[in-house]
Image: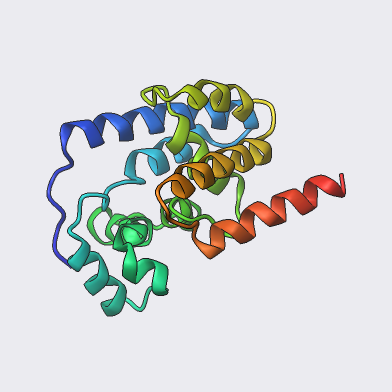
Length: 184
């Protein structure tokens, strides 16, 4: 695996903002804040890796790579980023690596840290200026699952407007959250 190039200034600013917001959310939800900060800081380390390289790494390291990832290789940047964090920084914390890997499409089994990074800190960090981001930031301190569900709904609208569809894992995650909410 090639060492990735340094992040662009905008991506670095985003990563710092995600890390700081994840730190604050972790403190609020009773999770170790430094671990959340680390996951936030490293979550996009493979975001600027060329798509051909993402596909090659997925093949080389036997990462799950369905039709969605083959069509949109950028979906692999979380999984590849987790591998890079392990290889280049020696990161061994499986929960941090999981949060990095899962931040793109989610998963049906998500830890508190996975939830903090996925669609919460990443999609509504303070540098995000779209209208829904402020409401999502507030919701993240009230109900993490509902904030994830709301962020997914926003993504569905965004992708639908562009004639695209949501990743099947994300669809299953949203359905799972709805079902849990019905039974509580």
